[in-house]
Structures are given as structure tokens and as C-alpha cells.
Length: 168
Image (cartoon, rainbow, N blue to C red):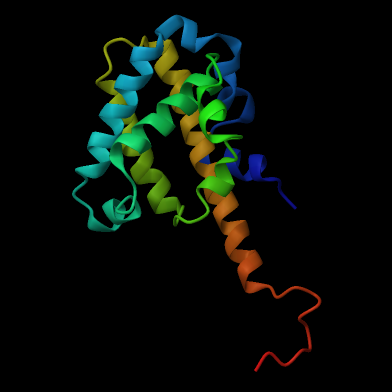
């Protein structure tokens, strides 16, 4: 049975070592806080203005400013900066936090499309950092897809204690 990381590598096309090359340099020190704020603002502006209603609907019950803050704080923390996200929200627990949302292959690709555009239009991020970040984002998006599929499998499989019981 494949691990979630193995599935993420297979589905994303990004080997784990490349996905975590963000750990080879401190991107927070290199880019600074404002760059992460700008990236997340750019990204979520694209998400909330998406032409596809099915994709926008995923974020319909989310506050845009809160989504921006959650994302840039997570990025800062994950890419070498202070633990802003954990200080405010606790452990990132990405699969658990994304549990209420349909994290499908299609949704991951749409998310990645907007992130790639946000990176491409971020003049404060050098090309090497963009590649490292996009590899991490692609791998992580498919890690969440794998987690979502596992969640859906678990919902369809009754627990062993419920087997044979009449729930009517």
C-alpha cells in the first residue's frame, strides 16, 4: 500500500526530494514577509474571481482576508520563518484542515493553475525560488488529494463494530 507521500509524488510528478527542496534554503529570509503576503493576496484574488463556479463554490463559506492570512502564515512557517500559523491556529494539520472541502484532482489542478499564475506575476520571487515553491505546492496539493481519497474510503467502510448490526 502506498503512503500519502508516495501517492503525492506519483500524481504530482514531483519526487519527494524535489518537493522538499524548499528546505535546502531559507526562503523566508531570502524573500521576506511582504512577498508571502503579496503572493497569497494575488493567489486568492484569482481564486475568488475564478470563472468556474464549481471552483469558487469551494471557497464560498470562507473569508477571503482570513484565507490570505492563513495561507501566507503557513507558507512563512513552512519556508523558514517564524511559526505564525501555529501560534495563531495550532498545528497546520493540512489534511484535517482541508477535510470539509472536496480536494479532488480537478480542484488541485485549478488551485495549482492560480498559484502558478500568482508566482509568475510575482516580481519579488526569483526563478529558482519559484521552481522550488511550485514543486512543493504541486506535491502538497496531491498529498491533500490523497488524504481526501483516504477520507472518502473511510466514510464508505463501516467500522468493524458496526458490521452485522441493524441500524434501523
